[in-house]
Image 1: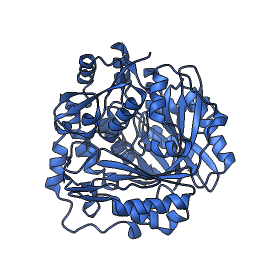
Image 2: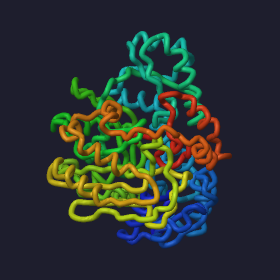
Image 3: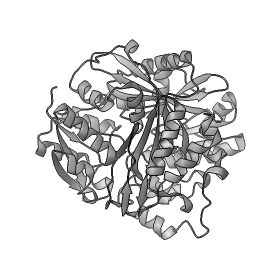
Image 4: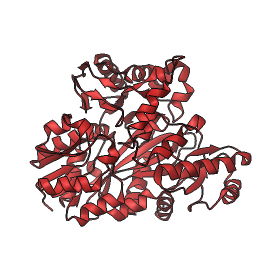
Length: 506
């Protein structure tokens, strides 16, 4: 389908990224916006823009009827979902296709297969992809969970079958904890995904999070573009990513890449996707975690190290083009690091930092890339994800990239809202990061060195309540209320707004 007009069903920096790819390819771009985004960068840069509703995402960016209505009005022949929002929803992809439009992404059946975590585990096991030892079917009750846990051995991890991002996830270290943890995980999964099903697998203590970028065309070919290391996270939300991983050997890289290709081929994958693994460095073993069936937030570092424009290839594949290169042609050159610049107040338990950006100076210079969704004078609200921009530094070696990133962070000036810039500086200067000794517990282990102490008078509960109220009527009230009672697993207020990749390590 040689479409000439594309509707971008998203907002912020990823929508702007797609608009720019369209412009380079000669495709007419159509933006959508809520009232809060009327003057957003992606709206101003697109060839055409359509209002789809008020600020809450449940009344705008999550409204399939409004998105398809904008497509009809604009004459768009294809829809790019970006990431988050509806990007991995089978119902959206099917609605797009039923409307006679091209969905830039995998088929609805693929989204369904990989969106169901237990079904994904079954398919990966059948395809010969290593999976974490555990059950392959959802558990019926706490008794079934107890029997499975005894067979696998403690500690175990309870996980939601219908979704990820830490929702419905509980670490259980003994049988006495299992019953309460099962009920809590099921309740949270039901509130987050509308499905309380949970399953169980062995808990891997302090693994690394390594993912493989794949591309599949409509002619049956699937290739991988190397790996990204995404181990530095806060409550399952990635903070720093790098490519390639500093610890994989060439043999491990080839083995993991091959597993990712088999995983994608097992579900007839089309488009750009990411197969995520947990890597046990001590044993040199890796295990399938999940597949993200859309473009990733951290795709720029793969673009830097491979020279392949992933968003343009999403569009080319959707138009029916075959991949123009072979696996042997793909290599990773140099090293790239990405820092996600969030509008969160570290001194207030990372609650939303809202307000008008009164001064903005973004870094530039050799080897620096900024994918930004804001500008000076832009108002940051609680309606959407806190990511302001993605800062990328590229160099010949990891150390060159690290030093370049620190230079870029020093140049980054944002006034009017609190940001994660200083936290990123501390992370990149930490001796363990310099030595590439990182895992998913990095931030917790080094909290004393890395995190500013919280102020005694926070959190401001009234402010948090106001942030949550922004999504009232969206069907997330129960999810937000329950999340506030989850002790150590309580998400930040941002994680209840249902936008982009909120709280997700993906």
